[in-house]
Length: 164
Image 1 (cartoon, helix red, strand yellow):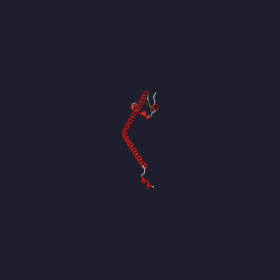
Image 2 (cartoon, helix red, strand yellow):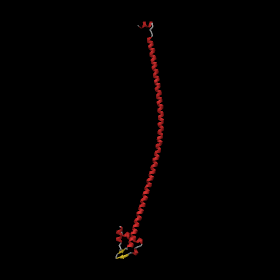
Image 3 (tube, helix red, strand yellow):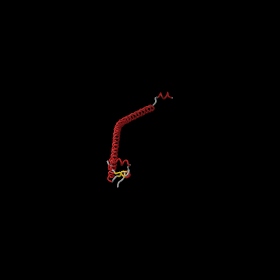
Image 4 (cartoon, helix red, strand yellow):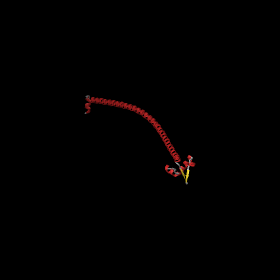
């Protein structure tokens, strides 16, 4: 049963113009019969037209899929570049931090040595001070002993007389 261009267009879901262009592309125009003011398309011609549209659709889908894959690959490549740059930046920062930690460890060592020396100096000063205090206490005790000896000495006869 023959169909019109309009019927085929409605079945495929395209315009009459698209079907007419496909007929021209396939070289089927000369083989079409005219039925009044419409072309009558036989089953074999209809199959060729529909096949051309389906192949076109299939090619478009494949192209879209390929384009999508290329876009995804490009996006993955961009992401990889960003991640590499981030890794490089972080590695650089890590190296700086390692150097800072090393410098701080050296500073801590120097400060620990200085603290140890200061503690030794304080201990020596305390020992010196304790020695000085002991010596003063001894001097004081000797002075007291001398004074008490002087107090205990008997007074001379004349000093007793003149004192009164």
